[in-house]
Image (cartoon, rainbow, N blue to C red; front, side):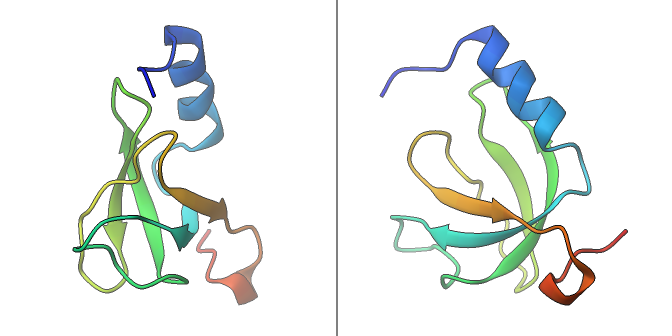
Length: 81
């Protein structure tokens, strides 16, 4: 998969500002946190990847087009205002 367009990256940034809480659904990496690990978005890089701080201490980024997360929106899901 190639790099996303500038417009796509800007859209990802608008949808996932710093502080957004997410839950990992799938990451194909030997160092990946376990599925269902929750974390906080620190930012979005120029390739559309989410820069992460996972609750288990990992800092592995979510790669655009490869890994899968879902945004949390309710306090019971681990969302922090």
